[in-house]
Length: 526
Image 1 (cartoon, rainbow, N blue to C red):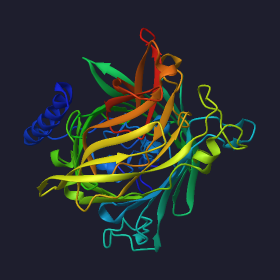
Image 2 (image 1 turned 45 degrees about the horizontal axis):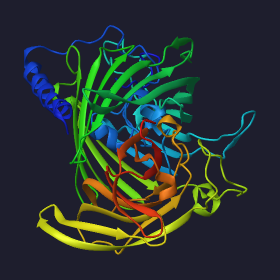
Image 3 (image 1 turned 180 degrees about the horizontal axis):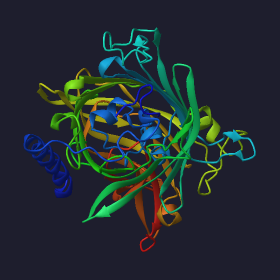
Image 4 (image 1 turned 30 degrees about the horizontal axis):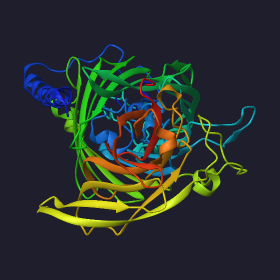
């Protein structure tokens, strides 16, 4: 953006360590603030399209922007496009930023699994996810226009108001992400950017690139992300060209066992500012209610004071819609209030069980060969037992039982604000969910179960009982794979009993997940 004209916007032990580091970082920054003023970077204000640096999404903003390693959240369209690779349902939503000093920002998106989507010159996509988004930043309509022609007049050195003008920034984006056979999610976003100030404007394009994958550190599983944002030729405004706010960001996140809490750490290296570290966390309370907080610390101090790095927020999730809010102070400039409303529409029609049957005209080939058995929808009756009552809600033990299917029962504990539901929907097939990577070692499928949702806030693991024909398990070990984040987490099932019809009943405890796959493999096969 041209200077001087227009507007410019300047678990385990490892999991507990991330949370402790967040607290220490916040206290250290607050303590250091009075000792020295923040140092301004030599390139500050030198880039155009500064609105591209404003956080998008109330959930990420409530975690201070520690979101590079997030998976399955549609706001990854902004933070790291690889994060949408495992998206299993259609999502749409909008975000509003009530920025300080009357500035405003809107962000709209639509994201969905890409399987079956036809593109010009490319053809039909077989996996992955795509997204479309609009990022719009605008100023108040009553900005005063003053030419400065009278500022040298000693009698009246103030230029009169010569009218009013507005300004806006706009970015239209298209994203695509998919998971490789090795389990790494790769994504890219192509953006068309326009800046307009009064009757002047400039247009350019930019590219975002990202990667996300599961990693193990000291025996614990983390999600690691890397993104390069705003890679482009710059923007020409009037007669001068300005570079875009290029930034490199790396992140690490972990879902803490037992609590469902998420801890995340990001480090960002922008081209026009000093490096920053962001630490964020979210904690599910009960009944779909979640609290969030985080802190961003810039090397050489935060520009608007120590507390300008603080962020907090909350979210409430229903079956098909979520509401989120985030708050962040900006020193003497004021405060920012951010709101998100997000809708879930379920999987595309091509994902419904009647269309997954082999021979269907709209069926999409699975990553591994699927047996010929057709899939089916299940509605499992639920029996509930209240265990305890607290200010957070009622702790229930729920057990959902099926008949006539490989899946026999699902049991788990959950916190609910209201009564427990009477049914648990599920789907059983022998086809992996679209966009899911192949099972480790190319293991063949015995059964796949998908759950649109688990009611309440699930506490701990889920216990599943299922039956398999004896002919499938002879000399083999039965493994259950939970679809967690961007990959599969495996557990070994234990035999419970042998059925009278030549089958066997198995039991396994697994983390809550939208999908589970069962495979009988040779004992040394994985």
